[in-house]
Image (cartoon, rainbow, N blue to C red):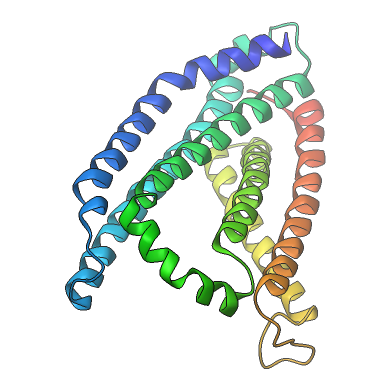
Length: 264
């Protein structure tokens, strides 16, 4: 039954999800052949930099819009399927509350991870032209010496971190929506408030840990180390904190959906 719930969720979200992401890939393909492949890095610096800044800004806005859409789609599907009129039907199925939660976590993570993979594929499509790779090869050694690690290593590390963060984001969304259901009224506003309060608390904890472990310049214990070692330490700390917070949120979400849900 769990598999059927996951399949239903993915099927419901697939049409609009893939339509928008196919459009994104087509935009990247067009941009690759009509802009990126025509770049000449030996041209005057100022016009080149201006056009690149404009292009990167537009692509960043597009990628951000798609990410936000997927985020909202995951949240909307969870709320609509369990706490709207559709929710009354969902709760009549021979499925336990934790199974409902797990089906949403798995389907939500699949959508978030697919979004990340497709967005990454689009970026990869943009930057793998011969002119771009040739230009990068001229500064690759110098960049690696300065940073202490290769760009490929950094991208792989960042990608893995983002994949893990997808799961954390899904559980945080569901936790916030479930907290909102504890309010006697204005449950959507309660969910939004829970999300932003949780995000704020996580940011404060992150800053405190960075201060304690010496990641801020100007404070006692700060290390001037940079490059791969510094980046790995920072990412490890962020991941550990994210996983701890996510575990707490999952336990709370499991308890709420099992013991406290009231659709009235």
